[in-house]
Length: 312
Image 1: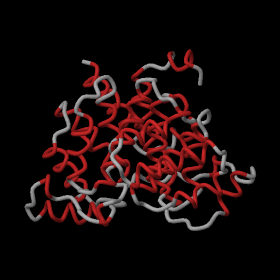
Image 2: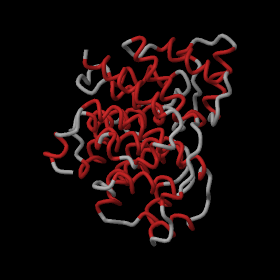
Image 3: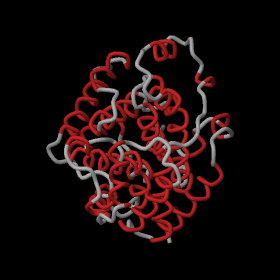
């Protein structure tokens, strides 16, 4: 995309593209979550698999918790820990489709009366991607004012994850969303920019590794195994960075690649969709996908409400 083309995309289109892209990544990736093989990816890159054949699933935790985060910001006009915790708990008690282990145990602690800022999982099991997957609305909130971003990420994080890797990945995603929504995303240097903002963590190291693989044009079937396809924060941050950078001029291929390589495909694709949608706008997503996306009209409405909060 040229700078001139980027200037033609409105901020509202970027907000809508971000939330729709996240939901598309989640719903397209959910069917293939946990897929262990490379056959689908090989078929896609060889031209033997048409992404029109990807199945659209229902929302999982990625979309549901992101929309809960966005609704909380719309209602409170800030990142309010108690309200976020209440909305996450309400979703959990309504069924919590796709919930991760750390979030599950955090919700049980909330039910037992633990304070929202002490409920998050600590230690190794708190190092998952459950914060990064839902942080996009926090990034959108800070599109034009970066002050307080990291504190807001921390507020969102501690409800379910009290782990430095989980927080680092969330901060990285939030900054990428901010730059994308502001039309300031520099894809060629994204990995370096993100890593420079993070503390010394494995997440920062793996993001840099992803950037090096892109710079060396290491193809996806070789790069993804090196970065990891699991649900840890550092694996997800790295594979997202790789997808967004490697297919810097083709967001649809970036999202499909996040899906077809398996592993934690729904969360990876959701975050890729959020960043690419924030940069390219709603119009980049194929109409055939949007027409099948569960709750698309409600997502558009929520994106508009979030935009109004940010720009009032």
